[in-house]
Length: 252
Image (cartoon, rainbow, N blue to C red; front, side, top):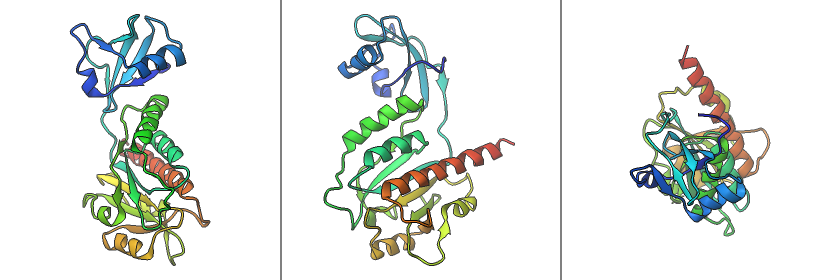
């Protein structure tokens, strides 16, 4: 597959509905993206991903269809351990967090309703789903991050699997371990490594205590106080770098 091919994410359920010749009718927004935005003409090759590790090469047709004959050309298993970002709703920056978390390799995103979330911090799953789709296409990922439904912190602290590694970013506590050293103690055998980021006003003390009681390790992301969106991206970048090094070490 040529790396320069423009990518289009199409759900696996729709790909299964191709006719016997391999033709798939495109939606209006998909036709607009390919024809008007990318200015592709009939016969142009297009890389198609399903967000579940599969990649096809198709060709744009005159009738607003995409020709995808045969089986997928590439299958890539999901990376392990998975990386999870649990982030409290914030007033500004959630769109950027979604996009950059996807670009940095996060596998699962859990929006949280925290005690100190502001009323202006809105939950926008449809918008964020579109941002994640566009980010997958842009950064050439084969796996679409899972965007989980909104949950309250108290309901969610105990939700992760018992084999997951759990870190909650916080400040103003004595003896906090930095995220880097904490990650060095973790192993790739963890099913998922979760990082929880609080709202603009920080975690409520009882909320944080509840998390710690459920096995979440308080960690520090910086000596300075970071905006929630900045903290999320800084933390995700550290997780991504740690996994890449861990997987590279396993190969030798």
